[in-house]
Image (cartoon, rainbow, N blue to C red; front, top):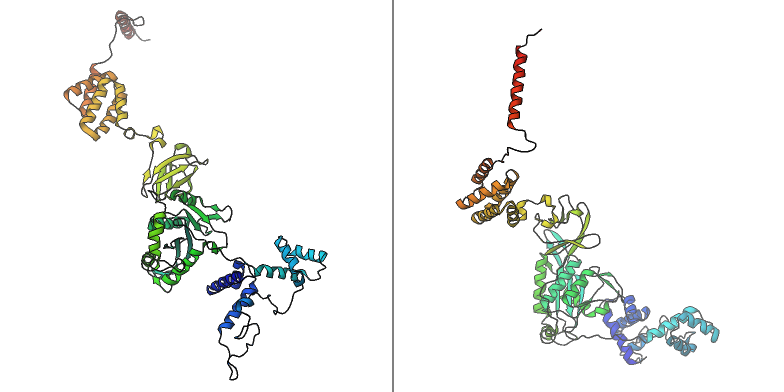
Length: 532
């Protein structure tokens, strides 16, 4: 194994051990044997202890022959890759077949297949477990070093959650979450405490970060949190539709990491630890707003002024000079976050949304509809998700009713408007229409009720009488309904129906006179006759 690969593994193991990672996690992360990591940690700890000196020698011999001493030619880096679980001098049954096993490993064969081939082709008598251990050690001896991924300015931001400082409010002790966003090029960061990891809180925190940065990166690398990713999948993740709409609104792309692979967002992993250990550790706040204010000041006065350990430059200067000009511009409006849910239409033809009431077409009375609302609009959909109504938001307890959603019988003349009533008065006659318009111009809003009463007169009096009276009232400048009503009644009485004297079905008056005389004569005769 080359010294370069060996040192790469040594540095990686040292770094992860200092971060308190478990042996199993380090082995899985680096692709090496767990026992190798444990053995290296034991050797490292033993080597760090001072040797036991005796009067007869400058440095005594180590009690453990595996631990290098002052005169030992074996280094700690050499010892780490000794075969696990056995002394360095002990050989494996697979050692004579090392070249064959390596060639088969390069061909992509499994340990089971290699063991079968060795038995059939090479007369191997060892067990399958010995081959499996040997193949594992071969793979552990040549691990690939990590590749650092540095980004261009404005290209990427990484996002992750951590635990915040305790908040003691109203006698209750609660710990919020900390959402931290770090720009991958300059390491400029934004931190915000939130109580819950909901989709809305996640989106609003990202939006606040973009506003604080003054721009948007082209990609967002996030963890597979439930608020953003419905189903985690490295190749085709199922992202929450609201988060997708948010990314489209800001012109960025959401890129979830591979599940259980924190190294894919290593910059924010270390950034979350930095804010927890440097800013919040050992602190308690009286409210969430107080913790947010402290974090803003800490980011400005501490995090932004530090010389970053990787870039070797001041974070604020690198951000202002290189990254801020490369960020995409912010959209003109914030993202219209919306809620949605099912609602049943009440008997008054309205649905309740956020303690306010909005009308729907009358044919949906008593049925369920789908409602989607944001800070400005309320949209109502049927079961086929076709939009059937749209309203502007109103205050809780208020009603927003569209006239198109009311039946004609439920709409009063006042609701229909003055122009509609004027058109109806014009149907009575030209004079009636002219008086109605002049009256409305003269009396203003209070003339609406006068128009209602004027239209009711058409149900009691003939149109000719109304028009004649309207003409007279208009000439006199009389725009009160009561005197006009009296005038219409008088005209109607004077202008009664005309009678004709001759008609085929009308008898002459002489015949009626004769009938009356005949009836009178018979009555007198019956009175004079004696009774028997």
